[in-house]
Amino acid sequence: MKSFYTLCLIILCHIASAQVELPDPSPEASFSQHVGYTRINLRYGRPAARNRKIFGALVPYGKVWRTGAGRCTIVQFDASVTIGGRNIPAGAYALLTMPNTNRWTVILNSDTTKVYGRPDDYRTTTELYRFDVTPEKTARYYESLSLMLDVTRYDAELTLAWENTQIRFGIQTHSDSVATARLETALKQSPDNPDLLGQAVEYMALHYNKDMPRQLQLVDRALAIEKSAWLYRLKTDIYSRQGRPADLQKTVKEAVAFLKETKPEGWQRTIGLFEEQLNH
Image 1 (cartoon, one colour):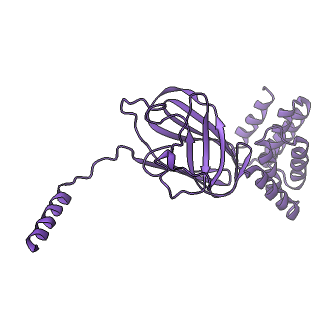
Image 2: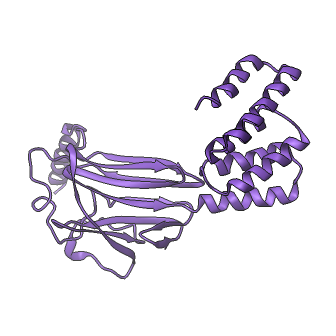
Image 3: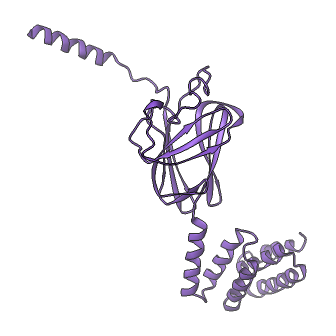
């Protein structure tokens, strides 16, 4: 009996020593992205097509899919977001999908411990939200499953692409409303801070036509406290966007006179930039 156990140990040691670590055919990928104030983390396994038909074959239609290989795909938000008009609380979620020819269902499930490798084992008890999206044909062939996040100012669009098919859906953060509230609070506390007034105007200008009368009011208050080329540029930008050439010309003249009088570093080049605005 002792000889038998010794033989088994020798065989096991031989098998272990003979194994070579090989590349994972479905390597794990992850990324982290700030979108406004919100951080989005995503982790998934990236299977490759390897000359196989994917959707409707390897990934069957009408069945819950873990959206990857290995462990389930996980998306995490450190602040609440809005997806498909639904508020999604901060947290980590299994990102599951149910492919079909003309419509996919996207599912967020709060249980991230399961693999979800067997569609028939799926349970809806921990499901948070599901919504439908329309699949599209990709512009190129994707050998490996690819999840990509395109940031559009304070929101994002998540794209899943594999083979010749892709789906997309938007993720809206609440960063704009948070930033606006923070600026309003700061302005109440320091109403005569020219740098803060200018920062508020600059932020609102990112939204182009967002409350331009308020922008003008704030920049005029800042200029009354302390003149600077930056504040003048904010004001001329407002007039340019409003299509008010007479006011634009008047403000450019004021800015040029200020620069000639104070002569800050690079003042001659700055004058040229102001005068260029009159030609657009």
